[in-house]
Amino acid sequence: MSVKTVSILGCGWLGFPLAEKLLDDGYLVKGSTTSKEKLPIFWKRGLKPYELNFNPEPEGEDLADFFDTDVLIIDIPPKAGKQGDQFHPQQIQAVADGLRKTGAHEPYILYVSSTSIYPDLNREVVENDVVTPDQSVAPAFVEAEQTILALGNSTVLRFGGLLGYNRIPGRYVAGKQGLTTGLVPVNYIHRDDGVGVLYALVKNPQPGQTFNVVSPEHPTREAVYRKNCDDFGYETPTFAEPPEPEAFKIVSPAKLIAAIDYQFEYENPLAFYYEP
Image (tube, rainbow, N blue to C red; front, side, top):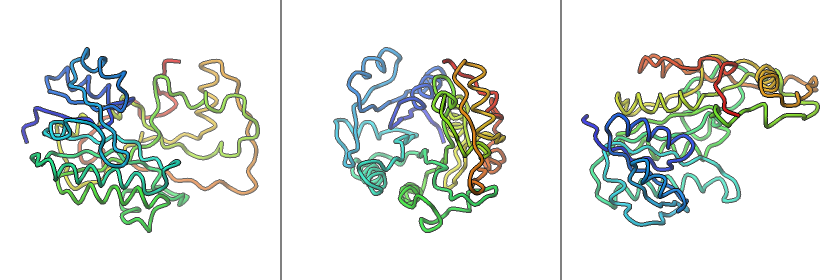
C-alpha cells in the first residue's frame, strides 16, 4: 500500500508528536482538534487542520475531505464519564458511518483503544483474553473495537497508561497516605514508544489484528512512585498492607513485538524520560 496522506482524528498529546514525525518524513498530515485555538498551531507546523467533534454525531465541516486519506488514525480517548458507557461506541459508530457516507476510498485504520478492557486475572493477559464484550470489564470499549474491525482494513491498538514528558505518575500520588496498591505491577507505555508503534504500523500495516501496546517490563507501582518522587523531589507517599492481596494483570506486548519486530526505546517504566 502506497501511503502519502495520514489523517489523525484526535491530534492531541499523542497525535501531535506523531503528526510531526510523519511530516518530517514527507507525509501530508491532516489533524483534527475540538479546540479552535489549536488550529493556528497546526497550520504553523505544517498540518492541515480540521475542527471536528464527535458528540457523538460529527460536528464540523470538511469531514469528507478529512476522511479522504490513505491512513486514518483514531485517537479519541475511550472514556465513559458523564456521557455514559455507550457514548464512546456511539462516537466510533458515527466515525464508521461517516466514512461510508462520505464515499472516501477505504483507508487503513489504526484505532487507539485501552488495556483497561482487561479484567484483573492475576496473571499475564494477551489479546485473545478479551475478544467479546462479555469477557471485558469495559464491554462498551470492546463494542467500539468490533465496529472498527468490522470495517475490514483496520488494526486495534490497546494502549497501556501513556506516560512520559509532563505526565509523571509519582506527581499524582505525591504525599498521599496509606496506598494499598503498591505491589500491583504497572502496564505503562512511554509516549515516544506510542508514537513509534503507530509510525511503524503506518509503514507496515497489520489489518485485522489487535495488539497490546505496553512496555515489556512491569515494575510495581511503589517502585515507580518512589523513583519519580526521588528524581523530582515530590513528597513520597506512604504504603500500607491491603486487607487482602490486590488483583492485578500483566499486559503482554509479545504479539506486537513479534508482528512488527518493534524495538522499544523505553522497555522499563523505571527508565522513562520526563520533563517536569
